[in-house]
Amino acid sequence: MNDTKSLPTLPDRLSGNPRSPHHVEEIFEHSIGILLNGKERTDVEEYCISEGWVKIPAPKALDRRGQPLLMTVKGTVEAFYK
Image (tube, rainbow, N blue to C red; front, side):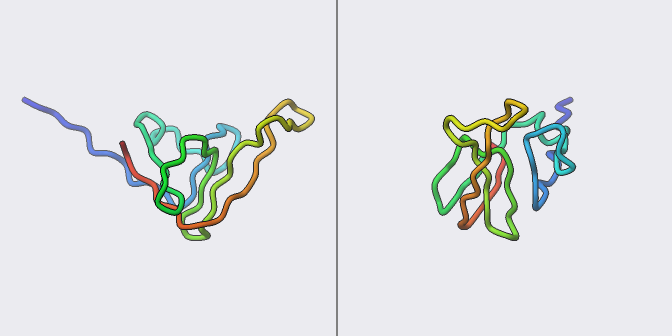
């Protein structure tokens, strides 16, 4: 028998940082894609569909704990499973 597991629904807001309250571990067991203004982004750290923004790490800037600083980019956000 072919036992397929259904994918969990993607939340409105999701973070890749495990310390964030918006991090959902079950979703990261699958590959996720993010479209921002119709173009796929692979460097998204956090997103919010209803507010229309994604957070991406700055190229070189780090905070005092050594984590990359996040820049907010606004636009039309769509999340999907690959």
